[in-house]
Length: 138
Image (cartoon, rainbow, N blue to C red; front, side, top):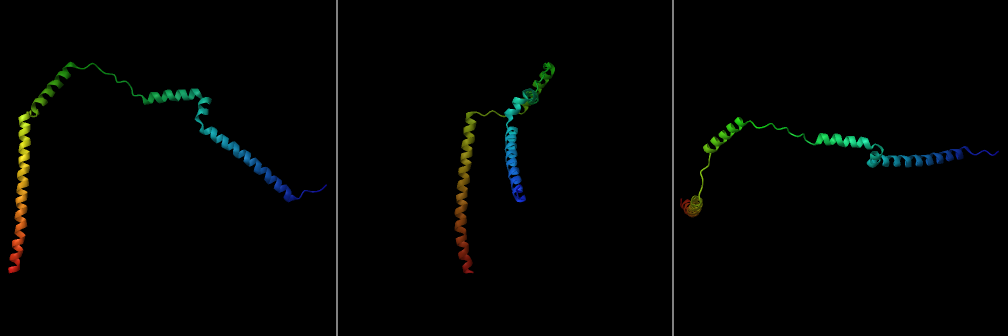
């Protein structure tokens, strides 16, 4: 019998390992795809998902507030306090004439301030010219 060289046996074994690795890798990829598909979990465990949805809904939805009937005496006391506070701090009512007078007064004050600013500007513009000529004379 002819002996197969040892290197040939090793090459055949390496080829077999590569094929096995390719198959194992394909199985791992398929398993990973299955793990990422949440639909598969819902199909496999429907009651777990129904229970989880109910529990999550119970935790997320706020509870209904139970209200007590209002205490009439407390309501009357609070109403009286609010009436007193409203009458003490009630702002003065403005009429149309008052608003127009305020507007006209504001407009007049702005005009006066503008005119005064122009006068001061003219005075300051004329003053440095006369002081610089005086400084050259000394």
